[in-house]
Image 1: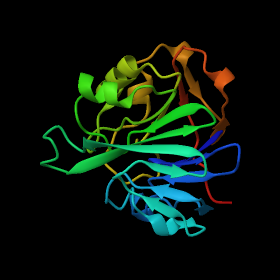
Image 2: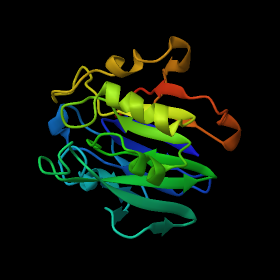
Image 3: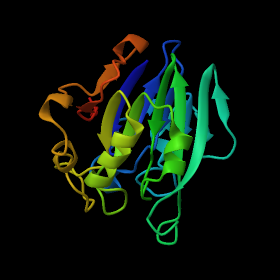
Image 4: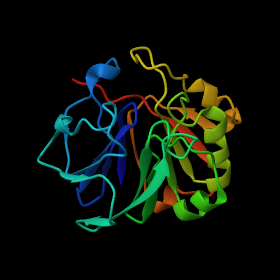
Length: 217
């Protein structure tokens, strides 16, 4: 399978058969434009402009925004309700976590998760091979809470998202607040905006991979 980072909390996941899903497409109100892509389906974790810009995805994709578990051409998709804040949704409402099983790999996109780490939620999420996790704080969990999630989930690969970059207008922290909490040997600053994975790439040791944003052009 292939994972491409389109910026902010948006990824394109593509199975070896070609079936593709875009997670949390965003509006250019965040400070930069999302690259136009096509997909078979789009998942939306919640209804904020930096996560629900479905119009930026071509191909008349199926919209998946929670509710029942969904299947898509052999890809298993499940949704898990969570909260966007530490007050059980009283400040920012609910957030939907999505899990995908593609080519035998369990990928978890945490959306705008804001609630504190709990045993109940961790048990619901497992197993996770690849974790796509917000780290910027303010509107989501911050770097330290994100590290607690990583330490308890113990995925093979962690790809941080929802952090401040040069063009981002949102008041959130930079990714190094998160990566600085880990041993340097486990952190990779990739020059690429995507990675291709198979089961043999899952070594049992957690690697943090910071991907570049796939830009237009």
